[in-house]
Every structure is written in C-alpha cells, then in structure tokens.
Length: 349
Image (tube, rainbow, N blue to C red; front, side, top):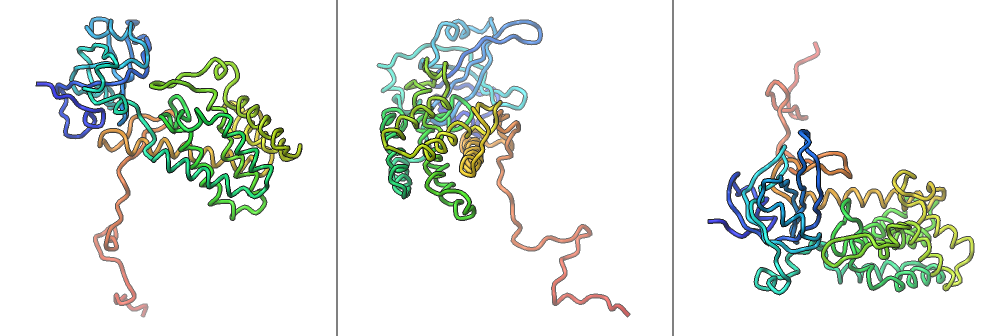
C-alpha cells in the first residue's frame, strides 16, 4: 500500500528503490524536452516546504496529459515509485490529479507546500532594522529607510532568485540580512571602506528584486522585471529615495554604483564593473552569501547521499558529509605512532 510522504521523507535513506508512495505537492516547473532519440518528454519539478525534485514523464505515461494542461503553481496529488536517474533522485510518477485549494486543508494546508526561509522572518526583519540603525550618516540612513519602505509589501516575502540561491519565500530578506551581517563583521578589516556607505549598499543591493519577482506559490518575473531587471529597478528605487532624503550628489552616485555593479561581472548582469572600495567590497560579500546560500540549502534539503544533486551555481555536486577529526594523532604511513617529546629517538652517533 502506498504511503503519503513529504519530499524530505521521500528523499530519506529509509526509502527503497521501487517503493510506492503518494504525495501532495506544488508544481513548480513543467517544460518539454527532447531526448537523444528525438522523442519528447516532460520534465516536471515538484516540491513542498521541505524541498523539491525533478521527474521525467514520457508520452506513454498516463500522468503526462495532466501536467501538459496544468499551470505552474498548481497543487497536485501524485503517486509513483521511488527511483534515481543518473545518480539523481528522480521518482517515477505514474498517476496525478490536480488538487483544488479547498482540499488542501485536509491534506496538510497551503503552508506545508511552500518552501520558506529556515530562519524566522520576524527575527530577520528585526535584525534588518537594527542594521539600518547602525548607519550613522543621517541622509544615508534616511535613504535606506525610504527605499525599504517604498517596496515593503514585497521585500519581506519574495525570494532572492527564481532558482539559483535563496529561491524561496523570504529569501530576499534572508540574503539581504546575511550580506549586511557579513559586511558589518568584516568592515574592521578594511578601513579603506566607508562603513556607512558599504552597509547601506549591502542592505539595498538587491532591492530591485522586490519589483522583479511576484507570485504567492511559484516565482515568476513581473513585466517590469522582464523588461528592466533588478539591477536597473534597484538603481531607480535608490535614486528616488536618495533624492527624497536630500543625499549629496557624490554619496548618491556612489550608492547607486554599488547597486549597478554588485553582480560582479558584466556577463552576470552587472551594469558596470565595481570601481569604488565599497562597491568591490559589497560585490564580493554578495557573491559569498549567494554561493553559501546554495551550500546551506543543499545541506539541509535532500537525501542522505554523500553528494548533492548537481548545483548549477557552483558547477559541482556538493560533498555533504562533514569532515572527521580524529580524537588521537594519526599513525604514520607504516603504522607507527607519532613521535612526541617523550619518544626516544636513535642516537646520531
């Protein structure tokens, strides 16, 4: 008899290949692809609060028709068998049906299907307010507050990306706090960097994503997000706030430059290359947290396999097992214990 499971339970090492299961999941993505033999198939990404997985459905699969017609963001009941494909967790879906929202409460509720930041959003928001309060320059502090207030309805809930890093509800807030937290910790190491300007830039570097992304269940780009992107949108938000706060022309230009250059490379979406101490600093910290965000999610979500699935942002599979530190000094390659000050040695005579 099939058992209804969550994604975390499905990925558990306790699951055996071929084991039947049922699940209520969110359809995150569905795309048509072509196999090497020119046959087309559907690649679907399904998930819940605990993570996601991908599964391939070919034309003879009875569930394929449903996914062709279902919209991304739909809730679906699926049945299938535990399986792996090319070393990646990829269950075989055999049956599926759309679940109406009125059914969700009896099946676990909407919140159980939406991946959210593992940290308390209220705590993150309080920490962000405290970080803004650390900005000593009055006009810079006002600029930061006004910019956040202008997008507050979305800033505290939208993800930081569609797929790459912090791609879940509250991800933008989490990523922003992490970047600002790292900046505050590292600033004493770099006295050449203006603390107030760098901290304001760290808090505002991704603010354009509050207007770039939308969606209550799955993440999509808004029309403006598609046409302009978060770098340009962030520049505009910061410029409006800076002018309202009467920030000096020099400081406003430097703050705008942090937003315009924070992507690091032109091919990654930066409008310009970082050319001030603060812009270089924020860009590098942003890249650090984006990559570590991928690492953190891979460690907390997935099965207990030694390596994670391939992570495009890292261009690698992550080794998930922690390092082992021996409690006693290791023997040498011939099996001899290590020498200490008390160990007698051969005479030189």
